[in-house]
Amino acid sequence: MSEPPISRGFRGRGGGNRNARVPPGQHLVEDFPVLSAGPTPPVDLANWRFGLDDGETPLAEWTWAQFQALPQTDLTVDIHCVTTWSKLDTVWRGVSIDTLLEAAGLSEPPAPFVLVHCDGGYTTNMPAEDLLDGKAMVAWEYDGEPLDPEHGGPARLLVPHLYFWKSAKWVQRLQFVDPQVPGFWEENGYHIYGDPWREQRYDGD
Ligand SMILES: Nc1nc2c(c(=O)[nH]1)N[C@H]1C(S)=C(S)[C@@H](COP(=O)(O)O)O[C@H]1N2
Ligand SMILES: [Mo]
Image (cartoon, helix red, strand yellow):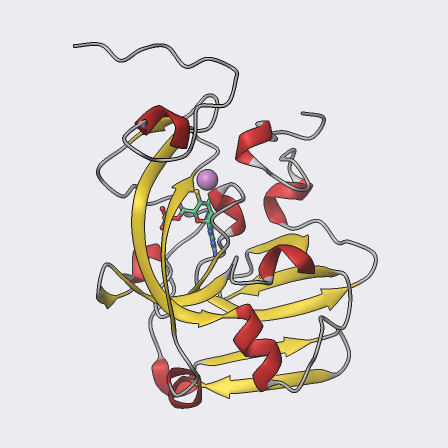
């Protein structure tokens, strides 16, 4: 049985209308594809650190044990990769960026943009605002299990409302910057912001 075509008008959210949750040009997958620009780094929890900085001054840093002791957040969200797969209702646990800022004693982001740094050298960027108000987290559990190294374990950034290349795996550091600094894919032809609902895949979209 085929589903009715999607009109361009408002169709409501969820409520059984599956297609209303799939952005333009995307298709649904049931599996969880792995996309990495380089090798999966070895997991080393003893030396794992996560930090916030403004490029010069370290603002906060956590060991794995300190990080696990922070107030935790659960998120169930849809994710959208620029290679056109989308996956609905993915379940994550970790620490929201709001919690990290609060734990660092920061009432607001110290600069309007973020450059995210990862083990292995991958980077990506976004406005700091896109990480706030429960919209993003550093996740270490997927579907109730420790995050698989291929998917970014021990911990990855999760920014589900932007294309999934922004959800940096093996995340180590959020650098607050002004002006904006493009990351790896953003330097290589991808859109500086990457909103799946506006199909901002490539520079100029
Ligand atoms: N460190 C790092 N993070 C990364 C990538 C990467 O190559 N290195 N790839 C990005 C891209 S393009 C996508 S689509 C998602 C894929 O995440 P997955 O492998 O868990 O599906 O991770 C993003 N985060
Ligand atoms: Mo991607």
